[in-house]
Every structure is written in C-alpha cells, then in structure tokens.
Length: 241
Ligand SMILES: C[S@@+](CC[C@H](N)C(=O)[O-])C[C@H]1O[C@@H](n2cnc3c(N)ncnc32)[C@H](O)[C@@H]1O
Image (cartoon, rainbow, N blue to C red; front, side):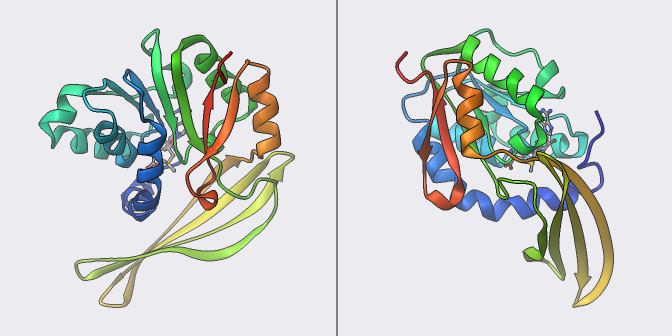
C-alpha cells in the first residue's frame, strides 16, 4: 500500500493538533462506559490515542498506523509516557491486515474513513459486527464534502513554531462517482521568507450519512450523531439488538 503521508507527515501531525482540541472532549464523552480493548484505526501521530487512554483508564489500546513516518511520531509519543507504554500496542499494518483482539470494546476511526473505499468500509463494519462486545461501539467522523465535488483552495493551517511558520493549503477535485482527490500544499517560512514548498495528494472516498446508514444496516449496526454538529461525529453500535 502506497503511503500518501510519506513526505507530508512532518506537517500533518502538527496541523492535526489544533483539531484535537475540539475532537477530544466529544470523543472522550462518546467512550464513557467502554472498557477495552480499544482499536484506534489510522492513529496517525497519536493525538486520538492519547485522548482514548485518558478517557478510558486502564484500557488496552491497539493503535493501527501503516504510515511509517506517522507511526514513528506515534511510537515516540507512546514511549514518552510510562502509562501509554504499558497499555498501547502499535501495529504497522493497514487495518485490513492488522491482527486484532477477538473481542473489542470500541473502535475509533477519526479523520480516517475517507481513506477506505467501499470494500474497506465493508471490512470495517464486519469487524464491528463480529467483534464488538455488548455495549461496545465505534466512534468516527465524516469529513466534508459528502459528495464528489470541487473544493476551492483555502488555507486550513497556519502555525508558528520557533522562527518558522507553517501553512497548509488544500483544494479538492472530483475523481470518480464517490471519490475526490485532495491537493495539498505545505509552505514553510523562516522569518516570513518562503523556504520550502511541499505538494501532496490524497485519494479520498466520500461518504454521506444516508450511505453510512445503508452500509451499517446490512451489518445490523446503527449510527447516531455525537458531539457538536460541525464535527460530523457518529457513534455506531448494535442499537440494542
Ligand atoms: C488524516 S490522518 C488521521 C490521523 C489520526 N486519526 C488523527 O486524527 O490525528 C489519516 C490516517 O489514516 C491512516 N490510514 C490510511 N489508510 C489506512 C488503512 N487502510 N488502515 C489504517 N490506517 C490507515 C493514515 O496512515 C493516517 O495516519
């Protein structure tokens, strides 16, 4: 599997950090009552892994992260804390190849579902249907756009670290009936002088709530909104069935 984050990981983890200020509290809330094990699918550098560990004391966490540079950040972040070191296992395979515990209390897939095509999502829903313990659940978010459409270029990140300033820009274009391509540009400035430009593209499968409901229904799963509307977060479970 090609690693779309191979060159951009340096920017991706720091640019995701501010989003986690908003995503963290509703994710922690959605995990209330869960025990473990918990799978963090596409854990990236581990912002979410840290939230999960804090929200669910003592739970075993399996953080699945196939991108080597992002996984390096994740492993270092886990290693920095004696508590995380004790509880978090980092797996390098993509989700479809990762060997997971047979019973799961929760599965978290934040900022990641767009990397899964219909077959990949089907495999994810199958894992939920087969392995979630009673009361278990998944938490994920759907990011816009929900349909394949052009998204004009905009700046989504602007952060200063030391003497350097990092800007993230992105635009998208349709790439098929349920797919877009994101074109990202990461610009680095030192003392306001442009010192580097990195361009990256990500394939992204779009998914709206109607299709989510339909796909989940085929596996006996139901979804409900959680957290502030603008975050597009959902809890998925068996709905008391
Ligand atoms: C935008 S990042 C989000 C990282 C993290 N969840 C966060 O929100 O901070 C998307 C992540 O999904 C991972 N990913 C992509 N395809 C995957 C797959 N098939 N299985 C597991 N992870 C995958 C990428 O490597 C990347 O770390």
